[in-house]
Length: 181
Image (cartoon, rainbow, N blue to C red):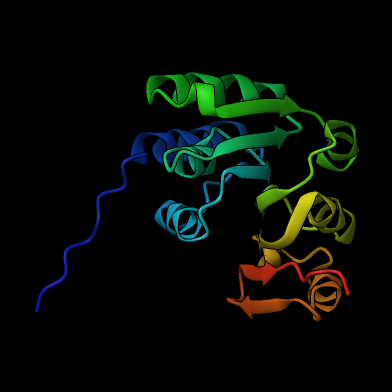
């Protein structure tokens, strides 16, 4: 039996993100496996996703291509503008709402509730950022916390989510928000 790798349908965004990183050194990185994000979104039948760390829109494109609506937040207005261009080129702009600012500050103002998937992939994660995403997530919703190997408060985040059903993949932690008791 042979297996064929699936083509990355948003490889142009991934390449542009890497080029932008090299030119500007701003710290924007594309998530390693966009197809995994789409698979998780489809498998959970997610209709709403919130993301901290837009970069140039690579992961937002993968979430949006499943039909989910994505609220994505990046602190850099240049990233938001470039993401808009990439998402429009792939005919996904109508499925993505771009927000610019600090995610921890913006999330409470957005008053997002009942979110199906919350995704963190912006910078070294903090317990405040994960807490803000967790507050928006519905019980049974999926939290995807990336960049854990970048340091920050990874140990504290793992402890924060210890009571959730979770799988720790090293770089990424997948955790399901428990129902209230």
